[in-house]
Image (tube, rainbow, N blue to C red; front, side, top):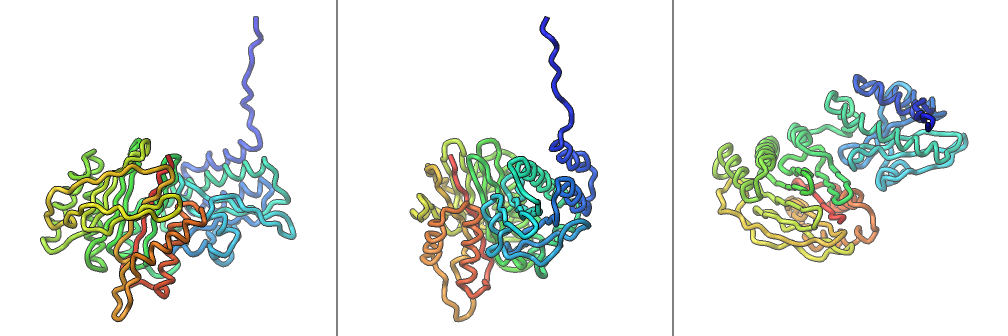
Length: 397
């Protein structure tokens, strides 16, 4: 008879470290995530552990203050090793006098929460593997516990936020989603005072559903209208109806709630992530930009219908077959218009020039979207007189 072989189920050092996170995760209060990270890093031989969270303006990485974690000043994303780790979603190592500073991206479903950093005497492949897995668990914890506490919101808020902006941020899905076949990244400006702009997406099986909206007006009225529009969109999408029916749901919801003189422009899309076939309905929104081979290839010009709320006719659905690596950039009119008295319109030509320059860098969709928004804001002198929102989708094939 063949001798019975017993599987080795003994706990290794690496499993013990990961288990220290998993065993306590279920009932761990949000404010104890920091001490848990510090404890695990100490067991690994690490010093000065940090958890850095992205601020809402996507300019800084802000240290999470907690027992056992290292504090310090916020780090500028565009001018730090932690920022390089964050933007490119890669491990970054920095030699120091007393060892090696290791920065790891905190990723959850492709969305980037921030960066975890720790100093080791040295780092080998085993240490890097363990740290990468621990950072993944920490990112999951931060995302899961975020809904139970205001702690992480307060860390990420770099300045006073308007009530309208509070409402809009509570509506948003994660700012980025990176999956094998498709990637999405978005950004809102002004981050702390946005009102009428919003977006939403969902990956249901092989189909990516996506929308960008711009509710008329400013302040709470615009935020309330955007809330109704996004709520109606999600309701219709979850019923499994097509783009025309989704438009009707949104149109009726906005009209019934706000009356005939209020409206929301919208860009609705559905992308088959297997084939690259994209369908869209344009309801009074600026036409999206198609980026192919890292250069603007044109606009997705198509027949438009009236904005939702104005009782437009059944919309015409447009179609296009994307090629591997194509990116589609949706944006609101605040990105290219300047409404300040005496101000000059930024214009579509400058937008296209900026896209072409940034696409030459070959960076990922999350970094390009962020850099594009900040580049356009700097060109305005650091402010915008209207909401200016970007949403980019990449078909990865």
